[in-house]
Length: 66
View 1 (tube, helix red, strand yellow):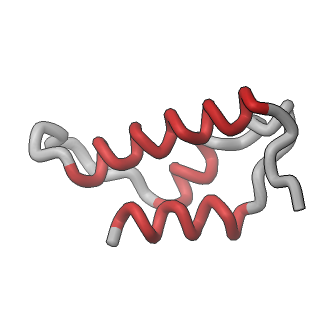
View 2 (cartoon, rainbow, N blue to C red):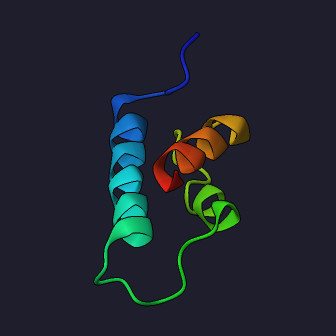
């Protein structure tokens, strides 16, 4: 099962994971924390103009948040 259409899609997702980790766990980020819905929306179309499975992104969010 191939989730990523290209290496670029994996790279963009990796960057979004770094952004999410910083947003949820950095003491320097004082603003409202990113929600799961916002994270999924932020990653729309990153897989060569297609969406990654929502369940996949949801699990990533949950793992990073907890």
